[in-house]
Image (cartoon, rainbow, N blue to C red):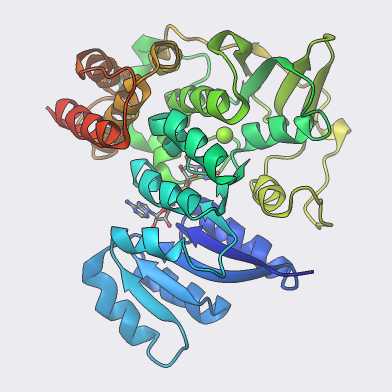
Length: 381
Ligand code: NAD
Ligand code: MG
């Protein structure tokens, strides 16, 4: 079997480091070609020495010399800057790009990879939120496959395997509810970044952890699901499931529901995105039903957690609405992490920017770039 050439954008993050564990476990299956990081030069260098990729990219150009010097005696190309991401994804030896970088920064390299006809293992959900219509249209045109890494979307995809010809009636995305499940506005007013960064079931990067606490993550996932599976808003339901064992469900036209279950561990969806349609043997801990005698489900509180409602509104409106919402959220989450605004201000800023950013119905790539810029400016005020 020919080895699969893999590029990992964002190899130093939560998804990126877990992806490297998957790559390490199957040396005869994968050929790691490229790894990239924004600013963590130290870890990138360590990973490069260990995994010997063909090339590395450090986003922060000021760290170029440090990385270059450290890898001087290795046979590894070193590049720097955002533009380099768009070039390394085009390398002939790269077959699949795992987009494990965070936020809007994923859009451009993902589009470049698609234009080069490569497959995408998509963790970077923001790319589909910002420009899902453009990204999926280009992927269809270029014959590039987009394999979901997000656990909920991987669950849907696993349920659909063998069922692609059967229409979906609806899907249920499960949500853990985060650290503030059941809380109301009064209590949420004064929560600190430290409290919000404590996710009950998953250990993830800071941005997605705050998004999980504010339910924005589930909102982004609703939009992500629309584009991945070609669904309408009314076909996507969110159900809170605090144990995070049922990763999501698909309901078919005959009323049958399929669910995908397992212990929460991102290595499984990462691996499936890279090995589909095969399932490889793992030594991950196995689920024991008797450890979880009760799996529970409850409705999502879209009134308290406004971000989830905003995401549905963006989905209904189409055009550049979701792009504006995403940009606002990237800024407001950053402001919250810097303790410049309160927790409830995240959704307040998001809503304001969602309403005020000029709307374009049929956007081009340049329109998305401009919308992102304007929305960030509005959110920062
Ligand atoms: P993280 O913050 O842990 O890692 C982000 C990675 O991207 C790092 O390697 C960083 O160097 C790089 N990066 C950051 N900003 C960049 C920029 N501007 N340009 C280029 N590279 C940049 O994040 P994460 O938790 O691994 O999440 C990555 C993506 O995967 C996000 O879109 C997130 O929503 C999605 N995701 C994560 C999880 C999870 O369990 N962590 C689950 C589902 C989806
Ligand atoms: Mg998820």
